[in-house]
Image (cartoon, rainbow, N blue to C red; front, side, top):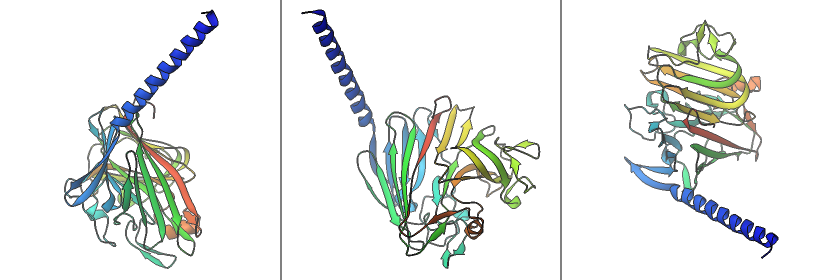
Length: 337
C-alpha cells in the first residue's frame, strides 16, 4: 500500500474514531437530561434535570420556578419564604403578604391599576394563573391566554446539556382586538449573604421609592455609589431595604455574585426587550425577609400609565408578538457564563 493510501486509511480511521467518541459523549449527556413530575402538596411540579442543575417549575402557580439547584456547588440559588407553603391564589390577591419567592414573572402590570379601560390586579394576572403545559424528553412548554389583557403567553424551558444554563424561549402575542400597553418583568428572588454583590452593566440608577429604601435621595446617580455607599454590596440583615431603577444598560446581564461561595447567578437577556433593570432587596426591612430580587423589565416606572406617558413600556398592536430568549447561569463564579 502506498503512502497516500496509508494516509487516507489513517485519516478515515481517525475520523470514525472522533465521530464515535462525539456520539458516545452526546448520548451520555442526553441520558443525564431528564424531565419528571411529582407532587408538592396538591401541586404538580415539573423537574428538569441535567448533569449540572436541577430545576423545579410549578405550572399551577403562574409557571413559577421554585428551585434552581446546583449539583456541583450543592447550592440552592432561589430564595423561598419558609413561613408559606406553595399555593395558588385567586385573581386580585395582594401579592406582598403572600410573597413566596422563587422566580416569578409580572405581566401585564405591577401596581393594581386601570390601564386602557381594564382593571388589572396587584402584580398582574400571570402570577395567579394555572398554566397549561406539555413536555417531552428535553423541554417544558407552558402557555396560556391571559383573560384580562388577552395576551397569549408561552415559554419553553430547556437545560444546557453540559453547562449550568437554563434557556427560556418566550412568545408573547397580543390576541386582543386593540393595542396593548403593558409591563413584563422577570422577578427572581435569590438567596443572599453579607458581602455578596449585585453586578450589572448600567450607567445610571435612581431610588424608586424612598419608603422602600435606606437612601433618601431621588436624584439619578452613577451606579453603584449613592450617599457614599456602594449599593451593589449586600449588607448584613439590618432592618432596611433597597429599591432601585437602573438604566442606560450596556450589556444584557444582571447577576448576584458570591465570592464566599464561588458562585454566580446571572440573568442574560436582550436589552431591546428589557431596557430597564429593577432591583429590590430586603435586608430584614420588608416582612423580615432577607433576599434580593433581580428584575429585568420592559417598563419604567412602576405605574404602566406613567410609563405610557413617558413612552417607556411594552406596546403590541393586535397580532404582534415579542419573541425572545432569556438564559440563566447558575454555577461557579470562575466559570465563564
